[in-house]
Length: 222
Length: 416
Ligand SMILES: Nc1ncnc2c1ncn2[C@@H]1O[C@H](COP(=O)(O)OP(=O)(O)OP(=O)(O)O)[C@@H](O)[C@H]1O
Ligand SMILES: [Mg+2]
Figure (cartoon, rainbow over the protein chains, first blue to last red):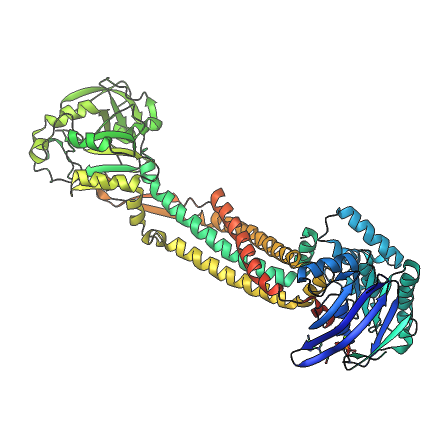
């Protein structure tokens, strides 16, 4: 472990009952690095992402995220840690259907004690960055896929995370929109020095990363 | 916990919210209406006695007079002894006390119902003061008479005239019209208590049936401390023996024969059923809600909400929803209560309390006190219902949130 690493995982294993989904993974990600995880469907990419991001605890092995060993943290400690350090972007956007765009962006801050005004300002500012300010009051069902993903990215950024995890962020988008979203992610990485771990099975997408990690049957090949 | 988010969840999931809210509202409306009806019957049963300023009346049954001449006692109201009166008036819980003496006077030329009263006592026939239509009310120590309006008309009596009864003559101080009052403790002629006591003590017919001293009486009126009525009635029966007839709101309620009177627990049982059914409806909709929202809860957890954050959000939603349901139920109940308030009840007055002898027109007919059922939703009942609704929300929300804790944040990655 050295303090250039935002993530340092050693000998990670994850079993679901008798099924070994992640096997003996050792992986470091540098601060400010953009890493793409690729592999066939069912190879364990999503599971690895959830272990690295503190969404799930490994069956064995260690994960050190932003200098903190999260392997033995309780569920609530992990939640707090995710809120302070991590942002997520999902394939199916996962916006709350009853909330407007800006409220979805502000969602991680609901439990945080800041004024409603500040929360809204911050959410609107991020929507502006995503060129989505004009849709701030609209609910997700009225947005296109690309627009939803912009809102979701804004949500991932509202807590000023050190690292963003994205699981097939363009999986539900057409190619033009995919390019636009990828552009946004690359900019975040380049301009703000944000660390980025992105799962994809699109090799073209993976090409724009700093490093490609290939998975097969739960193991990291390179 | 975010109120805005709660409101939006409830607003945009209208069907689910409506099912739970209406279900709860109906249950609460039933509960409130049942309790309001129950108190309305109880209150109605208090009316006949309340009109004469009392909670309890006491009489004693005796024999029918053999000879209908001069002053006699009705067989439903014979002597209550002075020592009994003293014991009863000093029972714990007695807050007001009055005595009266009812006699039927058969004079040669006419029959009169005569009631001896204590004019200054606010309990008992003293309340006639408000029915005065002419002249003045009786005053303590003055030998005067009040005459009932219809009797005065029949015999052409006016204020300032004199009236003769059982050989004694009294100036008419005023006219009262008690025709709209309950037929309890009403008479043709009202005299000071002492006058009627002397009259009864001197009557052979009275003494033959029921020995009488001039300090005795034959009707007692008692105002009881709150909650003491039934206990007092019991003690009075003990003192008076088995010929006593003691009238209380409870005895009137029994005569009403309503479902609410038949069983003290009727409204309690219906309320309980309403609450249980409501609980089940709300539980079912909320459980369906949570199942449907597994993914959403996964999102909340993934973006850093703790278990506690999620639980308080959902419990808050549940309380808010049930609170709204409670308010709605209260509105339904107020509507139902005002509709039920048009219902009339006729409270039967027991024959022995009617002073009119059966041989007179109207005497012996069943008497009723008819009134509108006083149904209203009390503040206390409303408050209890709203609190209970919110409590149902809290309990169900709390119960279901144990399932929430089991939803893993990584669910979010598997949920489309
Ligand atoms: N919670 C779970 N319980 C049981 N099995 C699981 C669970 N999560 C994942 N798996 C299994 O683990 C294996 C790897 O799943 P994972 O979702 O990590 O693959 P993936 O590489 O992300 O696939 P895809 O590209 O299709 O998203 C699969 O066989 C899956 O069925
Ligand atoms: Mg996957």
